Image (cartoon, rainbow, N blue to C red; front, top):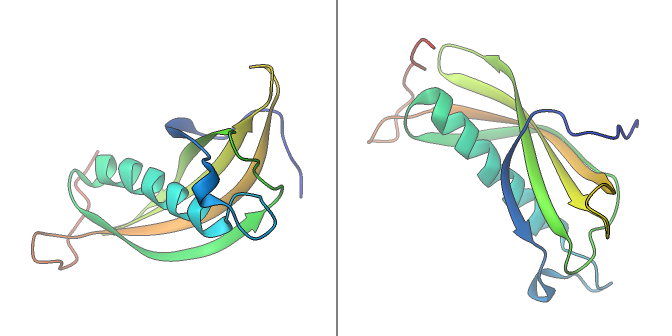
Length: 128
């Protein structure tokens, strides 16, 4: 899998990988990273849907490199498709290296969200 030098999409969220999020090997737990990516995707999907959204699927997920404790993790998101009620988003997680110029992609995944109303029922995504 190719590892480009710049993220696809726009920066949606950033956080610091803390020691409490480590796995048995001392690296950041993949589930934590997946959760951060899901949150970033929900932010973008919510903006597009102009309201509540729910994650309905992750159609692909690739963990490319471990994330060290203390790394700044940025989640970048790019809209792939908008349907009648669904939004498909590519989300990449990148970590900053010691120099601001040195960053690398650590994960990527394709997330699908659906717009929902206040009762949790599917609804149409408004026209852009």
